[in-house]
Length: 250
Image (cartoon, rainbow, N blue to C red):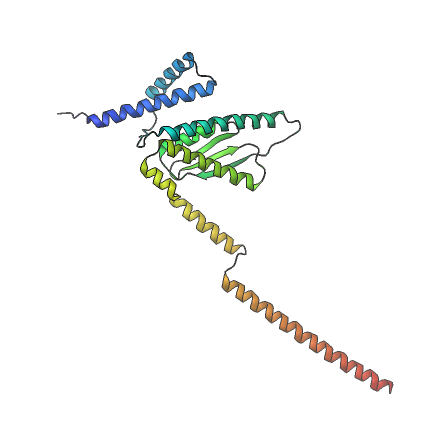
C-alpha cells in the first residue's frame, strides 16, 4: 500500500494559512490586553499555538492579497472608531440617570466567505458598544448588539457603517473577485427573497397598485352620486311639504 504526499503547493498554502491565523490571534490577544509589549506578544504566540493545536478551527483559506495602502486606511479608520466609540460609551456610563436604548440588528454581508465573516465580526467586537450575538454562515449574516441607538435612523446608519467596515476589509485583504462583487453591490440570494416579502407586505398593508386605486376611485364616485341623489330626493320632499302647508293655510 502506497501513500501519496500532498503537493508542495498545497503544503505551502496550508502553512501560509496557519501563519496568518497565528498573526491574527497574536494581534487580537494584544488588543484585548490593550498594549503591545514583548510579554503580550509571547503570550499571544503561546495562546495561538495552543488554540490551533488543541482546538483546531475549520480551515479558512486566504485567496486574496494584501494591499498596503488600503490596509493602512483600514487600520487608521479602525483606531479612530475605537477612540470615538470608547469616548461615547464612557459618556453613556457617566451620564447620571440616563438609560440607553439598545438593539440587535441583522446585517447581511456582501461577501459570504468565512474569512470575511470572521474578520468583520472580530473588528466589530473589538469596538466598544458593539458585540456579535450570532453569525449565520449560510447567508453571511451578522447579528450585532448595539448600545445607545435612538430611532430607526440610527439603526440604518449603523447598518451602513458595518457595510462600510466590510468594504474596507475587502479592499485591504480581498481577492479580485471579491472586489468585483463588492463594487457591483450584489448580495446573497436571501436578500432578493427578503425584498420580495417586503414588497408583498407593503402591498398588503395599503400600498396598492394602479388597479386598486382605480377601483377605490370608482367606489368614491359611486358614493358621491348616491349622496347627490339622496340630497335631491330630500329637496323634493321638502318642497312637497311646503306646498301642503301653504294649501292648508289657505
